[in-house]
Image 1 (cartoon, rainbow, N blue to C red):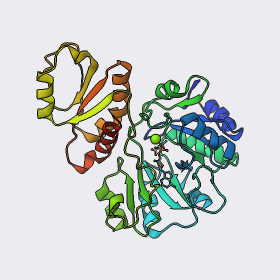
Image 2: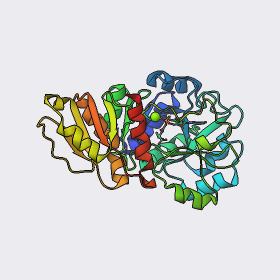
Image 3: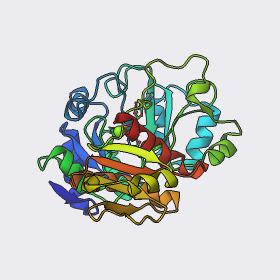
Image 4: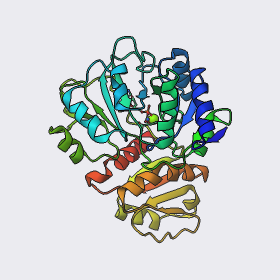
Length: 330
Ligand code: TXA
Ligand code: MG
């Protein structure tokens, strides 16, 4: 059932449901999460089961404020604290060494924990209500089945998990792609997943160069957050530059109704049945629309989604990453 997340009564009943060990759909500024009490192993196992997610693939723990970090992290390096001070609450997840004995199931057996303090007012209200009930953190992956497109509305979450799930409606997500993830357990900041926060801003705040995973001398073989084929709609996604796209459209025949296109370049489709959506020129706006566009295309029943390759600028890193992974899944 979908509840108005701005209704205080809905926050109260939802916090009570979390205390009872139930799962809940949670709006955040990035994407919607499927949340459970991070300290309740059975509830956390329920998340893995509902998503069809492998048990060693760790979940992010969401906290009400930076003051909660010490409940879960054994230690916070200086550069990680600087990131917390600069970007929390907000779309940034930090991987930190985990305190022994806490959030074991959420961490999927890893010795680290992913922590994030979301800025969405509904998430903030729910986390605060949970904290007063002794629930210090909410484990929450994106509220989609494993490997599929993340949800950016309460309706998307209901489409994934059905009406029985309690979902707080906080409106469409502002950011639209998942949080930036920075591994802070390796002595220097390492980018595991690009998001909305610009790498230049991250480097300015830490005073250090942000390493990429492939620069690590000993990459974590399990390195989660890095599965290539991810974020995939049912239709196959192909990335093309504007020229390739134009010539592909030129040779299209009657099959056009099985194809959807998302491009910045204005196109004049020869084929009438073609489903055409305009990709915004602004990277932030494109991120906001990305997952809803892929879901709309899927709902229209197309077999192929042709997407214009995003510009090479850093501002597009997050959108490009999600599209490349969606394309790799096909
Ligand atoms: O924006 C977001 O981060 C959303 C909202 C709901 O907060 N959550 C989200 O969760 O995207 P999920 O589970 O779909 O993606 C989290 C990623 C996963 O790829 C997971 O492997 C990685 O974070 N992760 C979580 N804990 C980790 C850890 N201890 N070490 C390394 N990676 C971790
Ligand atoms: Mg996810």
